[in-house]
Length: 287
Ligand SMILES: [Fe+2]
Image (cartoon, rainbow, N blue to C red; front, side, top):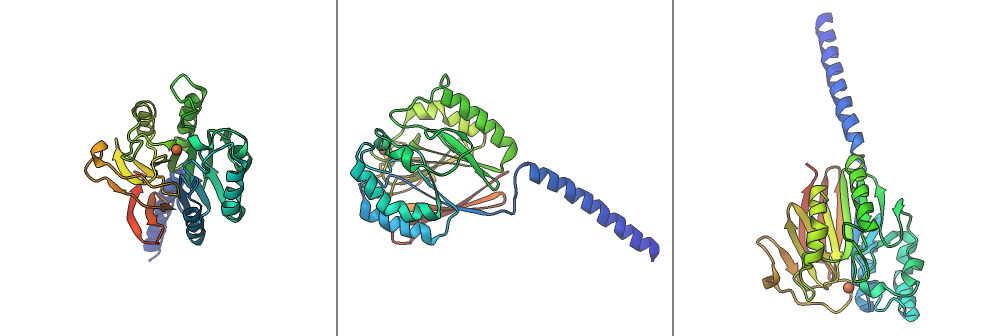
């Protein structure tokens, strides 16, 4: 009996050592049990009524933070537009951290920078990053006024940040305005595809969120899911699958937002229409 007990103790001890080793590895890539829920939307711009409804819908989801993929207002140098934006989002921004990426319509004036008050750990208000739980978030400045080629400070910063995130976080999410893959009015952006998408594939970015085209489009290229979420209020754009959609893509011309639930190595995404119905649900996981 004594021998049995001591053997069991030995086995338990071995299991504990193995678990501790696994735990040590897990700790190195983040905290798997600390779930994180966040919302994503974009291009609210001048669609105030829709924007108001989406803000209420997102708040009801009780996210920890909200990402905005650009074009917060119709004209960045228009004080009245920012006042309306404040009226619609002021309460939300008091309750939830809002992390925007600058769109082409936000350029001009100081309205964008003044309203970006959420804390970040690296970069500046044009491109920056922060970490929450086991997730690392990177906003890149990819709009008509930004430089992002390999020779730029922004590109060098991005590579450095992705390198660090690879070691410290289980998931890296990147978001910006101009979509590399899109089938709306603006369509594909070969420059972003050529310059940035190989980087996202190399570093295993979990999901890339963008806007600019006012609809929903989800595609996966080189193993990286890309989502255009530009249905935040600006006039909706038709979808044109003949612009380069591939098998398995999902798209819809509809006002919507995303809810992303991170649970350990799994990332559950829901794209939700303004009427509360679901466009699609899918899960991507860390390997
Ligand atoms: Fe835009």
